[in-house]
Amino acid sequence: MKTRDLVHVALFAAILAVLGVMPPIALPFIPVPISVQTLGVMLAGSSLGARKAGLSMLLFHVLVAAGLPLLAGGRGGLAVYAGPTGGFFVGFLPGAFLVGWLTERAWTRLSVPLAFAINLLGGAFVLYALGIPWLAVAAKLPLAKAALGSLAFLPGDCVKAAIAASTAVTLKRAWPLIQAPRPAAPTSPPPSSTRAASPGPASPRQ
Amino acid sequence: MSLGLYLHRDSPVHAVPAAAKMLGLLLMGTGLLLFPSLPVVSVALGATLGLYALARLRPREVAPVLRLSAFVLVPLFLVHGLLSGWVPALEVVLRLAVLLLLATLVSLSTRASDMLEALERALRPLARFGVRPARLGLLLSLTLRFIPLLATWLHEIQEAQRVRGLEREPLAVLVPLLVKTLRTADTLAEAIDARCFDSEEPS
Picture (spheres, each protein chain N blue to C red):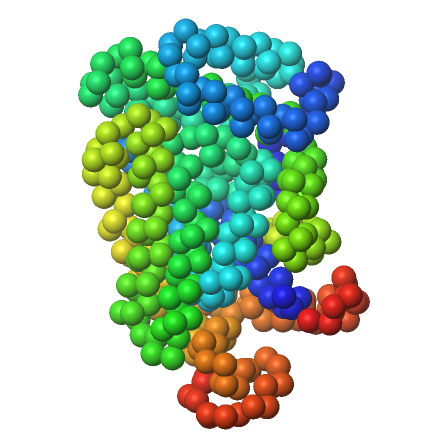
């Protein structure tokens, strides 16, 4: 991994922490707050790609587990994992990874609706898939009740996915980091791959 | 900007190594998940409060940290009590309370740096898969250094967009923040490379 990639991983973990500074919105009927932080999960995935986004989330987990209050509302420490919301937090990692993986696959034809679907799938549904059963076990709620309660997040997550999607498409034009998974495509940072077999429509940095 | 929940005391709880405390927490969590009966949970609660006393943490200092947990536990108790009776509700809520109290105790009595060191040691076997401890250290310190800086940038960008009447436009705030971050990342990576950090392997 190049130093530049390491720095990206570190800086996106920091972005995630900064998004946690914005106050979470508490809901009366389910013990999981809405936060802007999942937007950071989507942004990391769609800006960095699968591998770096996953590492970035792992790094964030290490910092939170070490007791730094970086989660929305100043939560942190191992208590986060013991609590009912732990599953949603654990879902950050596979969520960001999936967003990154799908974004890489769709890179050349990335549009706002496509990015929206990717971000909703990875940044919201993967989190639900881990968070709802975790909530049901930790709080001994019936699974259906936990799932029904989590529906409250769906509108917010749609808004976040829409924001992340337009950001991702804008960023693709302004500062692209992901290359289409095509081995022969000329990559922008190191122009070393001189194999120019097929001059694919790769997007060089503007 | 001070990060972390650590409160310094001269106590036996503070003296226990970070790794041991985290392992104990893990065992306790598993134990409570396997035997969640009311007597077991009550004894665990008593023991946990005893540990707080042993750590010489006063309730007044601990209360603000735990207030966030109360927002979770109180509605949960009510929902549970109405759905499935008050005894199971008490069981569930007490079990969660013990776990949250214990985990908070670990965070309060252990320096974040000690905890990071313990985690770094725990992750050391990953070296076999190409994870280098020095790079992990760089990642952790970079992130911590950049959180306050990024918060400042976010604030600056919001101010600038307010002048244009765009502060409620998430794109107008997020895109500049990301581009600024990524541009800094490039400069920073060049600076780190120029100083030959951990450069046994050129790429």
